[in-house]
Length: 448
Image (cartoon, rainbow, N blue to C red):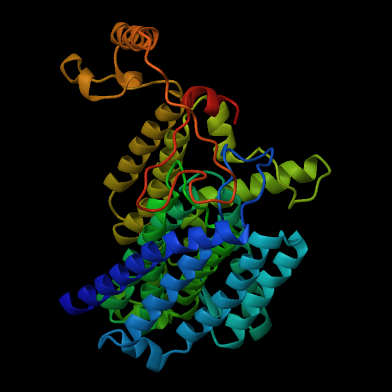
């Protein structure tokens, strides 16, 4: 067990390092290339921010696959399966279309067509759903056309779900990282615990996806220095879908029958995570719910399902009064609860403690949603160590009065520097420099 874990950890670390180190130069390239669109009405950021972060994430994907191909325990994935090559070819196509969209704003139908073609490229190379294990029935084999259509639909839905949720700094990368972690834990259990080699590609894909997101997050957390853009959101959505398809559509349920006492019992034993379509839908349940609500909302208004608006779940959290960072953390919480709760229940579905723990954590999440304006206060002995917004009211007023007295003493304020769009300094700084801050944070956030 130790050797495969070390090799997965090495692949993860290389992917994280390459993605992180590439993001800084990619940010400068995006600024120089003019990939900094104007602020739109639905945007929540206040400064022009470069896109094209997907370039660094694609570099991390290539580095992770290259390293895994030279490791002894992971090399068999490339020798016995064509799925890594299928993933790389489909990812390269969707990434290229995303780069063009980040620069030139492609039409939504063109992007939809590119998503379907990318999924078709993977299907042609063998990455497709072959059967569906249904509870109480067993394995339901699919015809070639049924499997191909189901695969394309799952890829397109997952890509758009991730793309729709990419509306706050660090939100999409963090939620996909949570989903990839849950998927890795489940796939590794199927591969190593049950000895099913066909689960190894999904385990590798999930580990690399975790590295792509973790390497990009330090640059993308609020206030973001760079956005992943469609080149990144569509890329990680496709990798997530490919991981789920490889796991749920390629693993033979008959192999599980040796350990569960029969094919039908094996299907029951692996619920709820083993049923195709349920696992990928549970690990991205929040983005999927946002996608469905957006389609219903826009169709009800007579708009195109692809028309952008400010009705997403993260927009509603901001309207409730949550800060940017707290809204992201709430979305993280619910994603982790659903994803890891599903994986935990699939491992020990006979115990009620898991169900009770999920119910208790759900109550905590609902409680947090009802406290949008709650601000934690530091103990009085530690008030000098925290910003004024975390101090008690009287101490904060004293700090403000002292600042006003210093301003009135005759000290010349430092003149503000004007920063032109398109130079290294807009919306923060480089990966090693200081970030910009709003003079009045609450005022800036209230206009979003």
